[in-house]
Image 1: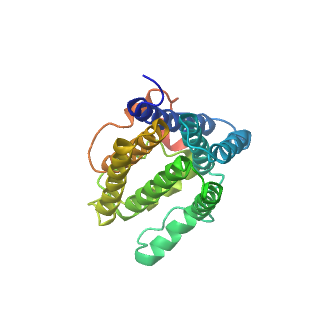
Image 2 (image 1 turned 45 degrees about the vertical axis):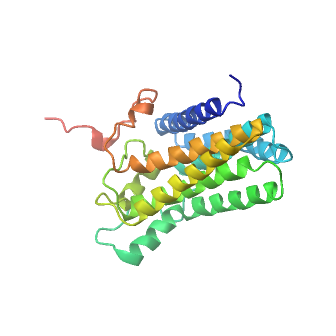
Image 3 (image 1 turned 60 degrees about the horizontal axis):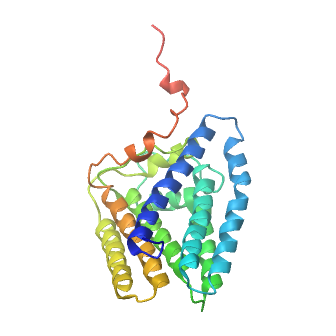
Length: 268
């Protein structure tokens, strides 16, 4: 078995999804229990990883080889991971950092929710534009499609949390983003859910077809990576509906959340 094997590639994608998610959650949780500048310091110190990811996307785009497929894939994960770290650390979020007022509905609620994450969304769009430019006309577009999957899945997930889903896990919401929980709506699914799941499922099937029909080892590995990521994105959506203990995948590796004043019982 080699890295050109689609099954090895898919397994690596699943492990990368778990590992990168856990690593970011671990860094953020530790910063929650640190000093006032811990979150910002982590984001600053991880900038070299962002630069490494950007360089990897550019360098790997020129030719589609097995090595370049993996380099592009992991480079995009570094870029995406840094942006997510900046968001979860409260460094790049939005102009609104207060909880949603009780009774706010409709367009006013949507507009306020947008302002809580607008800077983050604009950064995601900017990164998409730059990756598109870096890979336009290139032989290797694995990095581009990896980012597109992550981007679409994240937008769909946020819309579903806003409009309503039966199951919302707030266990890993960090201290700087506690106000975002007031914008989540727990309830029956809306049209946003089947639209998002259907799109991601079709995307996974399309990439799987390309994987199966590919004759080049690099294309086989690359499309297997993309198939796995699109499938994971669809599964993540279903976890907002199906009551499975997905938090256990990372809970064991994280320190206990810091104790706040409201966690301390009153003395008798």
